[in-house]
Amino acid sequence: MKFLASGKVKDLYDVDEKTLQFKFSNRVSAYDVKFNQDIPKKGDVLCRFAEFWFNKLNVKNHFIQRISDTEISVKKMKMIPMECVVRGYFYGSLIGRWKNGSIKLPENTNTSMAAKLTKPIFDPTTKSEHDVPVDKKQALQMNLVSEEQYNWLEKTSIDIYNQMTTIADNVGYILADLKLEFGILDGEIILGDSIGPDEYRLWSKDNYEVGKIQESYDKQILRDWLTANGYEKQFENDRHCGKEPIAPQIPPEIIQTMTQRYVVAYEKLSGQTL
Image (cartoon, rainbow, N blue to C red; front, side, top):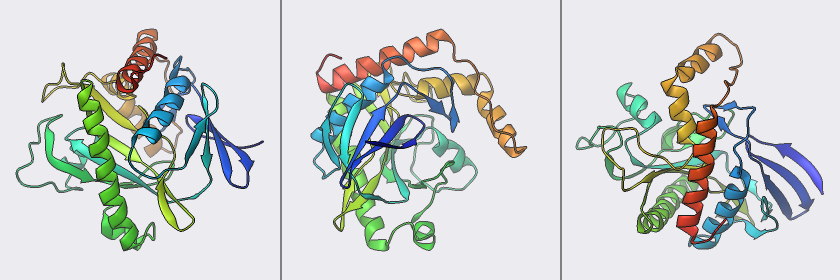
């Protein structure tokens, strides 16, 4: 088995001509900055979530099997260079983009923080070190996908979001948004990469309140801490000045909360004990 690459969270290995192996780590990143500290049990949770969602969703995917607590095997495919984001709530970067006019929403949209959108929207991005939002016209001009592929990805991504929303709702969670990746295998588009709390925002229904920062069961915990302490703006300023942002030390209580909520979310959604 040959090592191929080390990503922000997982390591990739070449098994044979048809198979890859993903090894999930405890690493964490936020705002495209990699942190030196690990989040205990994160790799285990991400691995098991990948297995759970790929088996649960009614869509063809590249998952083969889970082979350890932190490893899965998947089919090789040609990845589509566009990340398929679905947003169901007015939150995160959507707020800033709406304010600066770079994205338009229906006139009757409730633009209070964390308000539910009238219907989920497809809001894809480029797939790069720093992802850039694109609309259909831009995606076609950049040759990321064909028009037929774009339409299929939009419909399928929203269908997957709706499936996951129902599952989350049944156990007391709100799925605020979701990032998916797809690839092509034998001429067919199938779901790829992995699905877990690094790819979506998951909120507690019991504590949900429009206009507030939500109680999250995902990586947003770290993002919120960074924003509250001015690091998000610092990272932006560093990049503007051509400097690579330096990750601060994550407080122990943030690390502990992330581990706890990742585990709780997995156990509630899957019905399995980690």
